[in-house]
Structures are given as C-alpha cells and as structure tokens.
Picture: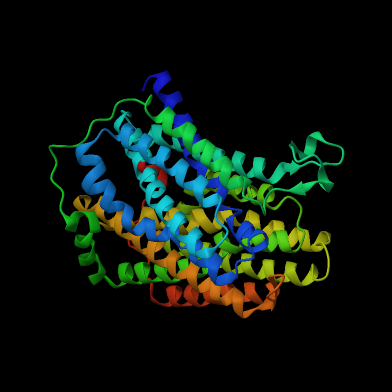
Length: 433
C-alpha cells in the first residue's frame, strides 16, 4: 500500500471517529442539564444509534456496495449528516430532537462499514495493514474527548482551552451545551468533502446479494450448537446493562462535579489500546470462556466502583478516594470492551464455517450493537427516572442507579459461566495475522 493511500485512509479513520466522539459522549449531559430531558428522553435519544445499527446493513449490503463508488457514498452521507447534526443541535424538545438524531444516525452508521470496506479494498494484506489504519479512529475519539473536555467559555462568550488560561478550571465547561454537536457537524462537513479525494473504490455490480445474506439468517443454523446459542443470548443480555455506561456516565460525572468528564473518559480508550496490544498473551493463557467472563466481571466491578464513588461524592465534589474509584471504573474500559467484544468477534470467526463468517459477524453486530444496546438505552432511561430525586433539577440517586447494571451484568455472567462450554480448539488472535 502506497504511503499517500495510507495517509488518506488514516485521516479518514481519524475524522470518522472524531465526529462520533465529539457529540456522543456528552449528549446525555446536554439533554439532561441543558435541555432538562428526563432519563427516558435521554435513553430514547441514545436509542437512535442502535436502531440505525439494525437498519444500516440493508443500506450497505443492498444499495451502497452495489451501485455507487464507496468514497462517493461516504462523502454524501457525511455531508447530509453535517446538516442533520446542525439542525439537531438547534432543537430543544424531545419531539424534534429524537427524529433528527434518528435520521442522522441512519446516515452515520452505514459509514462505519463503508470506511472499513474502503480500507480493505486498498490493502494487499488487511490482517497486517488494517490495525495500523484503524487505530487512528481510536486516536480520533481520544482527541475529540480531550478537546470537548478541555474547551471552556470565557467571560466574553469566547472559547479557550482550560490549560491555556490561569482561570481555566473556573471557566464554564461546554459539555452541557450544544457546542459539541456543532463541532461534530463541522467535522462531518470536512470529512464529507475529504471523502471525494479518497482512493476510488468501485461498486460491486457483479455480485448478487439477497435479503437472507444481508440479515445473516444462515447463521441461525449455528444456534443448534448449545454454546454458540448461549454466547448469542448472553451477548444480547449483557449489552443491556453495558449501554448504561455509554449513555449515562458523562451526565453522572458532570452531576457529581468530577474534573473534566469528557477528557477523563478518554482514559478508557487509552486502556482499550493497551489491552488490545497485550490481548494475544491473555488469550493463549485464558481461552475464550475465561476471556469473556473476565470481560463481564469487569463491567460488574466498574458499576460497583461508580456506585461507591457516587456515595463518597454525595453532597460535593468527589474526594481523592472517590476519584480513584471512578478513574478505576473508567480505565477498566480496556478489559470491558476488548475482553468481551473483541474476544466475541474472534470466537464467532472461529466457530462459523468460512462461508458464513461475514454473515455471522453481521448477525452478532445486529444482536449486540443493535438489539441489545437499543433495549439498554431505553431501559436505562426508565431506570434513571425511577431514581430521580428532584424532577425540576434532574438530580438522581446515582449510587443506587449504578447498582442495577452491576447486578444485571453479574447475573448474566453467572448464567454464562454455567452454560457456556469452552471450544476444544481456540487459536490466539495473533494466529490470524
């Protein structure tokens, strides 16, 4: 792969995930503190992405890849998405915000698959070349979180970075404002224009695809194997409490006056990169079942740490002990994500026949990123409402709230441990490279 192609693909990945990271993390804080949405309103707004995740394979598999060059579809989706994100940022009522976010998500979610397929098309050895390109997506998310977390409004209405001003820590954060959504809209516009300068990736006109292929229905035959069925059901169930983290962590950290919440949450992505690098070592020593169980255990521990940190922080800013617990919960993200999601993808790749691997991965994505996280978003919102203490100020018993997903993750982990059987032969991830 030529150097200029690698550079363009790296920039594409950086911008792709910068867009997502710029608005997604702090949306709940803006909706709750800025617009005074209740928990169910926040949960339903976050459900837009899982809904789109269930629908986007139709678009990518039936339309985008068959009739149009990938880079042009990518460019148009981001240009339209820029306008939709801008208009969404101007809404103040749930009845307008949710439809706008849903339409935006229907434009954004297909681009995740499109950036991957465009990259693979340009690579001679994807197993070796893709990780070096994809890591720029994680870096983009980290940079977005750092920027949003460190931006402050000064007394004259301007913006400054907190570490560039002596009074930076006293200036107002932008996390509860519409500015993160505007930054995402502007970046989406840049990526939309940049996409037309990406390497040409022609449509796959000669390949036939059916609705059965798009849905991955042939994967259902694998459900006859008990362990695979347990894995699929367990993955769906565990994604319900998992979504509590993605939707409500930033509002929670802002509510208890945790320092620079959006920036602090990027430590989870640094942890993700670290554990991705050392994951082959753990995989060889632990195997699939224990990797998945440790991932589930990490989610349980994370939520109990959040609950304990919330108790310690009651009535004021978190002290040192509370901050350590909360940072611990954030940094566990590497184990939470890599040990569960990445190990799950490896397990599916190894258990599915070669002809069904692509369909099986799509099916698992539908079950987890789509159905599981949709239920988690909506349910989490109603659970938060249950622990509301003052509707007029949108305050909550956060310590009690976090116990719910902790127990949920623990129950799923126990069921999984009882019924899932370790595959007889499991290769380490490095063996695929």
